[in-house]
Length: 329
Ligand code: PBG
Image 1 (cartoon, rainbow, N blue to C red):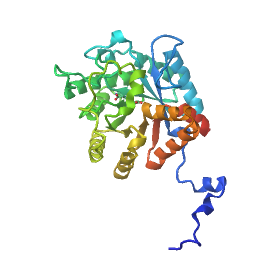
Image 2: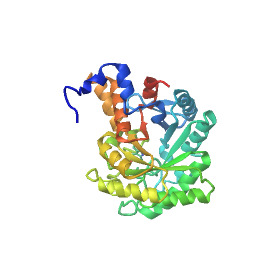
Image 3: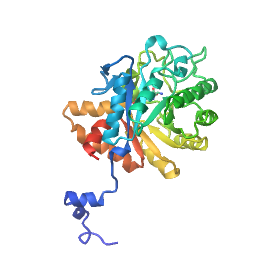
Image 4: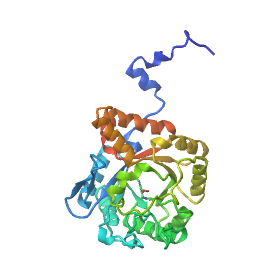
């Protein structure tokens, strides 16, 4: 092996053209999925205080943002509803209303920009009175199999509205296979499932829960269904199960603190891997930039590059719009 001084690794770093030639990882707008929060009304934009720069939008505005995604080259948007308080209930039944906020938003987005993929979350937390992702029993335990039965119907309702990808984010056991069966049974054989396969019980979800209005409602924590941050091998079992049950792609969530999981999943399995750079991660970057601790745009691009380098096919990021503008087309 030749070595210094014959080898000088700085040689290829000397100029931008050379760095571009040898770059091992390229990030483009096509790597982004843009999460959007939906709220009731018309012409409404509600800023979210813990998520500076991100708002909830009424459906007409979601349609406009779907068009914007198209023009920015962002291939897919992810929609999350802030269900009006009076429609939240113990059984989360609003999730199954074919005319609920999310279904209407999906239709509006697909009408406005049919070329843009629409991803919907399959989980009950925006619909339950206690903010949990599933149904709870009298001991406040989130029950698995009864919840899965509701999720099957929820996925079909979303597919019927036009969702291209359904993304179970609830972490119930067996839901991917059950949802695949329900979708196929309803004739939606081409609706994809992106499984939130390794989703951790994380402290980084706070601003999201503000955005969908579940933070104040949430009783206890989600540790009986979301994963323990201490575990990596268990994540591989989760991913293996979801693939076996028919997941088209898998997701690791949160993002940056779990890049080791992304890498291990990528090395072990041949499915597309996505990461969700979650609300708390977005907020950290914004707070750092606001405090003068770093340049926002550079932080955004560096973190997205890190996801790609770790093996992600794409990233869900609240910075998608900013990033797509920076990356051009
Ligand atoms: C709910 C869901 C959560 C997120 C996506 N879907 C929050 C949670 O599990 O409590 C978090 C996203 C984020 O923080 O940006 N099923």
